[in-house]
Length: 185
Image (cartoon, rainbow, N blue to C red; front, side):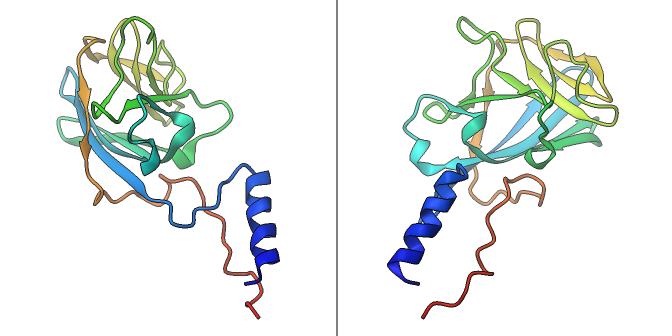
């Protein structure tokens, strides 16, 4: 590939808001949340390793994300980053230094809103979502708040570094397909 061609490709990616990923490394965390009423949730989040020293990683910096909900170990729903639309409620704040999701507290009135607004009604007719706000940590299923799932909003929500976590195909932002570029001379 010529230097001019590489420069043009990099400029094009930056113009689209995508940084070239040459040599970029990601870190992955898995997590499990246990709520009331036999409800639980498991999932994973991935982001660029250069953010590990930051105090917060937010939804804009997430590369891959998925959550799967259960009641008494029976699957009830899921949400993945590939399901994100312009109308999806999507807020995620993760502290990589302390390896935990931010929970309700001063300065964090709704630190987590994963396909679920504060009243638990916008996760979609067939959707699934999770929220941490001032009232509780809780789930949404089929556009309805699962009141029985609620736990204290300040309860810690840790995550575990797990670079072997396997994301489903719809959990990651799409990547640019560059294999159609002309061969190098």
